[in-house]
Structures are given as C-alpha cells and as structure tokens.
Length: 304
Image (cartoon, rainbow, N blue to C red; front, side, top):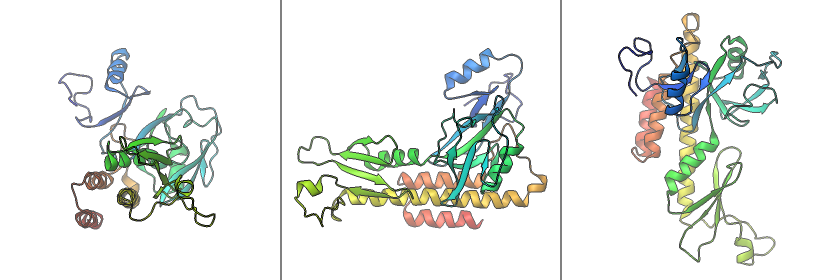
C-alpha cells in the first residue's frame, strides 16, 4: 500500500500496489502476518511479489523445494509428483503424489496452472521445464481455481436474493428463495467442462411424473434460467480471456526467450496482457460493460 522512505524496501523494485506473496520463505496470507515476518526477520529480507493483477478465479500459492525429498524425475506430463493434461487450452493439474511439494498448498487436482516463478506456462512441456530447472527454495505458482470462480459468479449474479448451500466439491449449489413457503429448492449443477445447468431434484416426485418423464430439468420459462445463462456466459468469457492471454503471452515469451529472465523476485511476470484481459472480464461481470463492448475491446486487445 505504501513504502516509507528509509524502510527495508525503499529503493528496491517493489512498488505500492504489488501483491506480496512471501517474505523469507514465509507465505503471506494477511497484512498482519507480513508485518510479523518483517519484525521477526534479521538483517536480510527476501521478498517474492507480483506486479500483475490476477484474473477472476485465480490465486497464488508457494511450493517449497527446500525440504522436498521426493523423486526429481520428470516426464512428458509430470514433474515433482505432479501430473498434468491440457483442458480448455490450459494446463490442468490432474494428479498429485503424497510427497509432492504441492500437497501442503491451497492448489488441488483439477486446478489450472497459468504461471510458475514468473514464466507463463502455456503448455505441459513448459510447466515441466520450469519446475525441473527451478533453483529457488520457494517457487510461486499462479493458478486458476474453477471452484472460486463459481462461488464468486453465483454470489454476484444471485446476491442475497436466494439462500445458497454448496456441496463439498463445489460442483453443486442448492438455492432456495427465503421467506417463500411455496418455493422449492433448486440445484445449480456445474458440469465437468465448466458449464452450469438448473435442476429441480424434487420435480419428479412432486408432479408425479411417469417413469419416462422424470427429468429434473427446470422448465425453460423459470426465472432462474436467465441466471444460468448469465453464469455460463461469465464462465465462457473468463476461460476464454485467460486462455487467450496465456497463449499470446507464451508466444511473446518464446520470441524473447534468448534475452528473457524467468526468475525475478520482484515480478510475478504473468503478463500485462493477462492483466488487461482480467480487468476487462471483471468489468463485464460487474455489469460495467455490455456484451458487445466486452467483445469489441477484447478483440482490440488481442490484435494489438
């Protein structure tokens, strides 16, 4: 927020507005924790920070390689106990060994890796390369969490008009209109590919449907169907923006590869284009941009 003249970070590359990820290997989850780490540190401070805004649904985590004693072997789709595949044009973490350094972090199987240690990871080979060549004790990873995106979108679209209860896997959300005795609970179910559908689990029993007509799908004239349409459009826009940003930043990094540095301690390096697309998606989600304006501005950004 502010750097006081004469402080430990005065004169460094750190600037107000940067997101501080760790100090001396300690993951920072609050301003109070950051202050405690600085006070308890000696004369030397090593700070990992990012200067790029995070797209909606994305998070930073830190993996510690200092005490990692597992296998250092790598393959075409795995490294350090992590296994990957490509989905939605992004690199997805699909399996984690018990001794992998990612086990103790907030990142889980199913999340998408966007950048590691300042390098945008547009392919599995890039993820494996950056992980296997990292010499740092603490390595920052920017990843996309579909669960968090679902929660944030549902909260913004529905607000407090409906009571919401999420399943443990955050793939279903039961919604109920409070204060309405005749209202039945409905379910927002998110499919594996990310899209949402609206279901009425009790419809078959309530309406005494026949065995061949017991679909739980809500009729098309239900008012919540417009909510589902908005949710799906938001998911598509965010996924598309992140995917295109990663692809273009990866291509740009390939062009500059002979003269680039991927391990800067003061720069998260996830790319200015990704940041611009993230801000654009956030404005669209909040209703500040129409669909046509969103698509037009995004098109100009991608052609720039």
